[in-house]
Image (cartoon, rainbow, N blue to C red; front, side, top):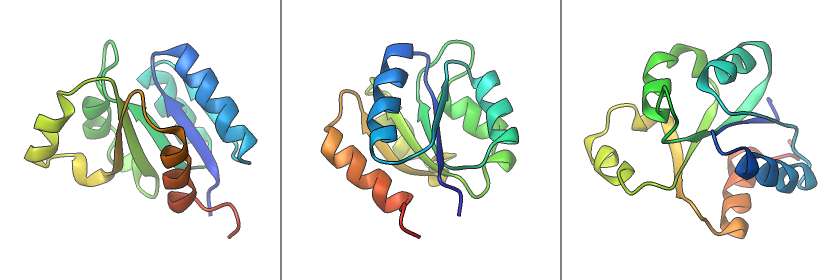
Length: 124
């Protein structure tokens, strides 16, 4: 079972903080700030979970999911967002069946960590 987590988010400070929290929980973490770098990492790494920002420059999280759907097979996806726009898209389906969880920023860290542990248990 793949144990690594990849974070794709254009907010570097958010990536660094979240990375430290998840490393403390025992997960292997990599992060990047661009979708292009993210897909390169996905193709070369072994990730069980992708934490994907909804709103990024050049390519949104939704565009990323649509473009790289095939490369994401077998990877659980959590989308994180500071935008309320996502609720409109959730109602429409589309790529969102691929997304296991959606978290609005800022989110409750305890609940977030619990959801990650459920999606990607370390003790298997």
